[in-house]
Image (cartoon, rainbow, N blue to C red):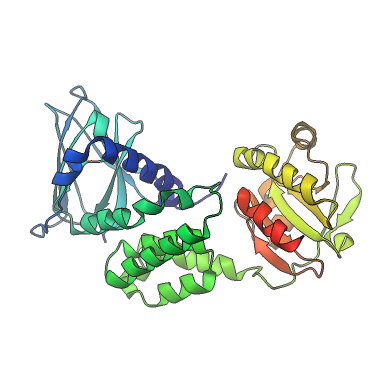
Length: 364
């Protein structure tokens, strides 16, 4: 439901998988020392992998889109992938067109990979200096895996330690193409657009114009839209009975303006959390206003009833062209704004335990 950088989507899963796999295959990880390779015109990946039959496909996927860039097959436990990258970038190697994935930060080097079907997430990689930086970054954040989980419980100490560790990595690797990834992960925890922009501004032009650098620039631009502390503009749309409902009619309360749709699976998965918080805080000057990006009214109403969403709901039934979504630049869902009694934005995109923590702090 969300058009996002592929790495941001898959990395939490991959990091968790890598942690588990490394724990099971320590001898293999101990061998995985990446050495500088003699520069070549493009990259060559020579792989050795056991556990797959001859003819099994091996695809190198773009880290931004997930699209295949080059493909080959395994023959006698070996494969070779060739190509050229404009700049070092995150890639995913997929065997037999299905997970688990092998993650690789690839530059134009002569790269050696050794792994097995059971240890794909923990390969022995040699020859790519950028991948050496990538492994160093994974080692940096490995002790703090739990704080990156989408529904992680609050742990201020671990979060502070993780942020400091990532910032240290950024300072120690100012020219690495992995550094933009570190900035992305930093902001995932800090949710601090000003800090993200400060980190971005010290990057070289090459890093700023890399795929992940461009993603950071996009995030900075989006963060400046409807920024925390500004008044969320008023809007009016019809509810399920056709009656016009305005955001301003709820002025004086804390309001979670929740953008969702019946067809959006992540939205539906988050709904029980919103219901729980609504029930907990509705008698403490808090309510929710749902803005649906549905097109079919029956589906919209059925989802409201099925999920027990007993607050106000509005929609013009124009899908992604919903006028309120267009007004606020909503191009992915779920998204939400928490506004205060004065109409100013207090927080954005609060999900999981983060929503309850914020409401508990505000509505004591």
